[in-house]
Amino acid sequence: MSGVRGSRLVELWYAPNPRLGQRLLRGALAPASWAFGAASALRRRAYAAGLMRQHRAPFPVVSVGNLTVGGAGKTPVVAELARRLGARGLKVAILARGYGGQGRGPRLVSDGRTLCAEADRVGDEPRLLAERLPGVAVLVGPRRRVLAERAAQELGTEVAILDDGLQHLALARDLEVVVVDAARRLGNGALLPRGPLREGPEALDRAHLLWISKVDEAESEEALEAWVDSLLDGRPCAVVLSRYRPARLLLRGESAPLEALAGRRVLALCGIAHPASFVASLRRIGAEVAGTLAYPDHHRYRPAEIEAALAEAAQAGALLVTTEKDAVRLPASARARLAVLGVETEIVAGGAAVEAALDRLVGRRRPAGKGEAGSPERAGAEGVR
Image 1 (cartoon, helix red, strand yellow):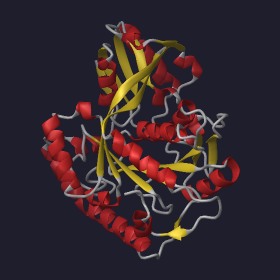
Image 2: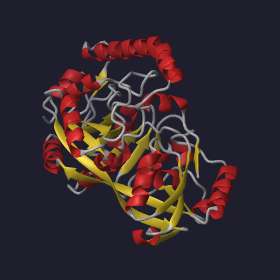
Image 3: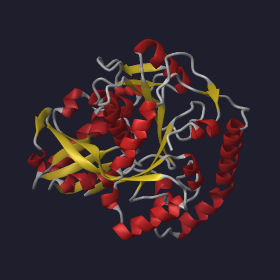
């Protein structure tokens, strides 16, 4: 039993053996991909030449981004870096775009003490980060420079994480982290809309850390190592390997041990970019996955969809289980009738490189004051390599 409500484009991007129709569509989209790539390159050159202004925050900035559209595992990486920076006694803020939120302009999701906005206003990922990271401020808005100014002036922020920041060149960064999914890699390797790439591998020229997520879902260790080597192509970029680790379970609104799902028949409900990762996490703790109801990333569930999912689970003799990211989009009445599995990122290699990069970042803290304009080259030269 499985209901898939995804995008045809995603199937086009990641199909290992594309059908004739998919190959024809890829060809038809080639001009649009060329135009997208040309426009993106022109924009990067404008920043490099100083024709477009890049602002520097009055505190160090860590950018966490990816080469592809969605599903690389950025959010758990952002959370892990925020925890490690907070453990150093710093006031941390996360600056996010707020995809999927209906609000406009700069919004405060959390000041580190109080949750100030719901997911429908600010997006599911910022709301989830705010819930999972007490002591860390979370702000959303299209202009991250404005968020940085507000974080400095109103919250006393000492270091910020720029969520989905690789292509957001308006704000300078001191540490560039690029996250890539070990399972789906770069899809067909083409730029949008022909492929999933927002930027090609040459973006790694700006990176300090290449963070490979979901390594346990890779084809093999040997294949992964060879692919990472080819991706780096000699670039002096430290590599971090991580996987998802099931961390907590809510069973009908109450905290429960992960073992509560061992041997239990479940129906997976998710609106995320890569449903297979969620299914893998469920199987890792011993759940018997009867099927998957997969919706597009950031999907807003209608009451009828929730009721239909609960009814389908009951008919299958299964417990409906969803992700924490999906749960923040559900009403409390629905969360009380299903299970929610939370995951965290677990570093399996490269942890020392992460710690060294953060130590150097902390050592570069600037005195409070006004930021300054800069360029990508300047930001890279002043970075933590």
